[in-house]
Image (cartoon, rainbow, N blue to C red):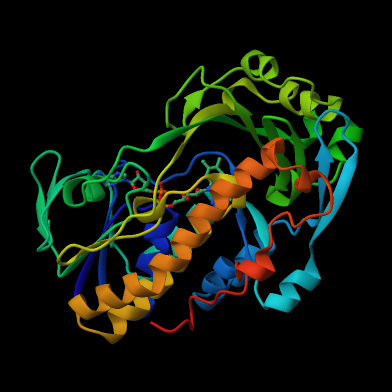
Length: 382
Ligand SMILES: Cc1cc2nc3c(=O)[nH]c(=O)nc-3n(C[C@H](O)[C@H](O)[C@H](O)COP(=O)(O)OP(=O)(O)OC[C@H]3O[C@@H](n4cnc5c(N)ncnc54)[C@H](O)[C@@H]3O)c2cc1C
């Protein structure tokens, strides 16, 4: 069986690696001329960590990633800790899989290297998909064509595969804009650099900060309610002045974090919500990751669910003929990803100070009850 994957993002590369490990023939078509990732942090929770362990990347993830220990939930205006969450060795031991903060580029490079080793020459750069038909015929910008028995659209939030085959409603602007930045930790005042990772919450605002690259860099994302600007792009540059003007009554820790950000390391993007799709597959073509279920970032599960998809899809394709495999993949994944999509939206509202329970003792993100971290894509029934 020849499998083509459109998109060499975190989801597409994990799918390629899982398929190659199961000895299926795979080709990845990526629009970019060079492989790479935006500068930002990413959290790998045990549900995704389990897949990376299974694919042989667990040790590298543990080596390169940071285990936060304790996350502090703090009041944005005062900086005072309201409560703490354990993200420590006990959590990892309980789930038997890593929970780590990583630099996206480090995870991406690790996956790309492993794919190249397992299936040399399988990643074709400079291939931008222009059109696709349900029988797996692909046409690329510039005229090149290809065909595969199964095609997987792992081409992200603005998926061409989805647009060609699945008419969808336009996404809804949430009224929130997010800024993300990276700061060399030694550029921060010592007392700010030493602060624990976690979240600051206040009305209409949420700040997330954590270390990556062994603590050498501090990653942050700041979510603000504003309708001034509405572009869904992860790479639109911003300025410290613009972000500071949107911070409202934020404590000194947050302001100092923004002020220490190198100008080229600050970006903004508007947050759009999407409804779960009624179906992912048409003929021999299916979707994976953000193309199938782009979600708001409040649960930090976008890449994790893409990685889950990748493992389940590869297992289905290795065990069943294409049509049956795609049906089983979709049946195994739709409910889970719709749950995470909807819970992420809900959590966003709660974080933004709309739910007073968050500031008190109520459940913040009940991952145990939701089965978020316990999900095992390597063994789940398909
Ligand atoms: C700031 C930020 C922080 C985040 N933090 C987390 C986190 O902590 N944990 C988490 O789990 N998730 C997080 N996410 C979400 C997560 O990054 C995404 O859900 C994840 O990247 C989706 O992976 P993907 O492979 O589906 O798509 P993408 O990573 O978007 O990859 C799509 C790939 O397809 C390629 N492509 C697109 N169109 C075409 C085409 N026509 N032809 C060929 N190639 C094409 C693109 O160039 C790209 O390489 C975060 C997102 C952001 C913006």
